[in-house]
Structures are given as C-alpha cells and as structure tokens.
Length: 406
Image (cartoon, rainbow, N blue to C red; front, side, top):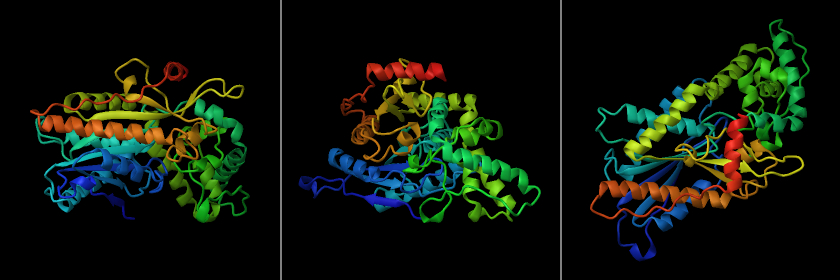
C-alpha cells in the first residue's frame, strides 16, 4: 500500500514567483491495529493551515502506510526508520533541495502506540549518529503524540468500560472455552461472531476509528489469562472468537499465533522502567538537540451522576513538573468513554475538541520550524513562540488525580 503524499506549493499568491526554500514533512503514524484512514482529514487540514502560515515553505503531510502491529515493537521501529530515510531523500530530490542534504524538516506525529514508534525511531536516529557532534539526519524537528500511553494505560479505562462489555464478555468466554478445546481438535464449537465492515474480524477498538461502537471486555478471566489483551481495551482474544470463519478451527496454530504475536506488540505498555526511560531520553533530546516533544491527551470532563470524575485514556505525569508541562489536554464532551475518545480523536463528530487540536498542533509545528531556523541562522532574531494551550485548573487537578489513582 502506498503512502498518501499530499503536496502543496506553500507559496502565497503574491509570492508565486518565489521558489520555496524550506520543506516541512509531517509524517503521521497510526497505532495498534490502526489503518491509513486513522487520521481522517486531519493531515490535509494541518497541511493547509501550515501552508498558509509558514512563509516561503513547502508543506507535505504524509501518512506512513498501514503496518502490522504485531511482534516486537523494535521491528516496527526498524521498518519505519528505513521508510523515513528513503522518503526524506525522495522528497528532498523532488523539491530540488538535494537528496540526503538534511534540509527537510521532519515532524513525527504518532497516535496511540504510533507515538511510541515515533519516539523510539527518533531515539534510534540520535543514538546511531557517527559521533555526538554530528547533526541529526533525517532532520527531525518535532515529535508530537496524540493520546500516546507513554506511562501506560489508565486502569480506570477498564473499569469504566465494564458496563458496556456484555457482548465481548460472551465472546471472551467462548474463546477461552475454545482454546481449551483446540488441543483436543474439537470440530463442533459455538462462538459469538462479530465482524467489521468488509467481513473482516473485529479488531481492537483502542486503535480503529469508530470502534467505540464495538464493546470492550473487562472481566477477571481476561486479567488472569491475558492481561495485555485486556488492557488494550479489547478484542484480542474476543477477536479470535469473532474470526472463527477467518482463522478456521482446523488451523489452530494460525489463530493462537495471531493472538500471542499481537499481545507481544502491546506488551511494551507494561514495562514501567522502559516507559520512564523513553520519556527521559525524549526530554534530554529536546534539551540538547532542540527536537520539540509534546503530547495531546484525551480529556473527558465530569458528567455526574454516572461519571463524577474526569477521565483520561492514558496515565498522566505529575503536573507542574518538566515532564508534565509537555502533556496538554484535548477536551472532549462528545465521547461516551475513554476508548471512544481515543479512537475518535480525529473526527469532529466524536471529538468537539477536534478543531482546537488542529490549531494547537499547527502552532507546535510552526514553533519547531522557527526554532530550527533560529539555530540555522543565528544572526536572525528568533521568532517568539506562542506557548501551547494550557489545561484549565480542573484539568490540572485531573493530572494529579489520574496519577494518584494509577
């Protein structure tokens, strides 16, 4: 599958005779079980805003082609790094600024676990330079994440989804029974089947647009058998049950391998030391090399009496700390729960904070590009960056409450 490479001239009508001197590539990376359509029209809208506001600059929004979210995260990072290296050379050549010259400003935008992939790719590029004084190539100027669980998934996600889990509870029970029977080669099995559009098995709602309509399972039996599948909010094992026709009962190995392979991919969310180490490296890279790091997280305000407290999909860092200042709320009053807010982040029908999210993201990209220009041309005055939209007092309180509950 080819990536969508939407290209714009970047020049205002009055400047049509001027060839753009800067190139900004905004690369979007989907999360667990995401697709090319995860971001909807967000990339194109962001490209339009930046084209109109970054003078003498070509802006391109490019979506990293859909990839398998299974196996080890490191393998996905390697594939992405290779793809980004090739993309950078091709786009620099196409825009007449020399392939491999490092003149393209790269902005990585990852949703959910795509943010982990983006962060690890950035860290890998930094670590593999020939020496510490060598410039970063590709020239990544920002790493922006959208609802990425850098500190893990909030445990209340599971609790708040429990009341909506009736359908998947039945599926989970069926598949757990089926797993026991697979060893005996049982050929008569009754399962609850749920299929998505196109007849494909339903997949984890934590990363598929519109998946909030699917129900998530949060029962103790899931916790005991497969905490990773349970914690992602859905349907890894239930997906195996739902996909009986796809996997076929006579091909036991395929179904089991699919489940375990995908569980291994999301298993990174349970390594607390690794999670904290990643964030420390990102802050160090920002401080030492000027690569902007920022995270937007979904925030559901209280809605008594059902939900008297605010809700978030991800665990948040402590407020009023260097790390906490890099996390800003994206308020959503339309989503019914954390999973719907997470999967519907890039749709105005499920996120009334969608347009503000676009404006805030554009602001951060402009800041990153201006910061790079200031370093490249120190004789010019550095543009004054507008601070990102800060959370309200209520949202700051949520920061602390979410961390304490976790």
